[in-house]
Amino acid sequence: MQKNVIEYLSRIVQLYPNKLAVIDSEKQITFKELETVAIQIATILNQKDLKNHPIGVYIPKGCKMIEAFAGINASGNFYVPLDTKSPTSRVASIIEVLESEVIITDRINEANLRSFCDKDILVIDDIYNTVFNTPVITDNLNMETSFETSNGTISVSWKTSNSSVL
Image (cartoon, rainbow, N blue to C red):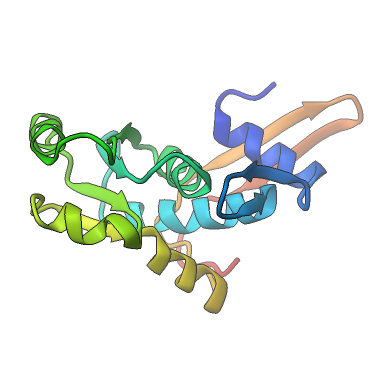
């Protein structure tokens, strides 16, 4: 039995890697692509030594937002959706109250976010370039999952002591 959404994702990737996970008006992603981006986001957040921290997500609803949510969950942090349609003063206030050290956004909303936010900003479009053009380095990624099935146990390990390449 899965204990969290990341364990569920890992199981689904094992069973249906090429099945569509999310479709929005701009793109669609498979479960394997979702997991790949999530692992990269988790890797980046873990390299920043963040654990159990709020991570703001300033991205409109769609594939990119789901990828950010999955990566944040996989890193051991929790996501806080920030509405890109809200007034900047409201979003700035939420970020201040949360004391979020990192905000994830997309290229379209980056300039607006930088105009009122002095936090560390990760641009998910840059993460895509890293994921799909270079190997994923999993320093500090510390996650193990296993699943019970009718045929036995499936184990997936994302725990590393040094660097691994996926």
